[in-house]
Length: 241
Image (tube, rainbow, N blue to C red):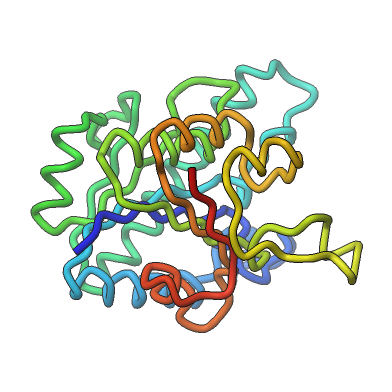
């Protein structure tokens, strides 16, 4: 049994939706229900195997960090934090439909929608079998959701972080622009910082390195990607201290 923190990007939750798809009532579709149902099925399999699981989502399908360049940075970041709360509430309901118990926790009060984060309560929920969603980032501006996931993983004594992205690992250059880009199978956080690889931001890398937190980065769309990453048999990049 291990304690796993899974990071899902907002873009991953949107699937192939480019922001122009609309539902029957004409509203923009923010989520790909089939993709999220597939995530829920994999998480349930890991849960049933005895793993304790926490989830962090990005908010990029609703609001990206620099979407609000015309407004104050602090307010823009606060909107982004609320976007992650919306995502966690939505995804947690899909998980419930798959037969999982869930709790959504935030570092700030959101009425009765969520539980306010505390390490002891989060660990208790996971030990009792709930999937815990850590929404709202760190609760402070100027910190990315990457920093938020490392912080929560360290706080709840997780064994590893699984980063599900739209690209299958860390490359020496942008594989979308350079067909000869080389993927790294293994890196240290020091190498990530020295090479400026931007797999995760510098704050996250330093925090993870100082606390010996292993991170596995992989493409969500690969078959059984989350399960394979958890088991260590995956196509992607492992980052260690």
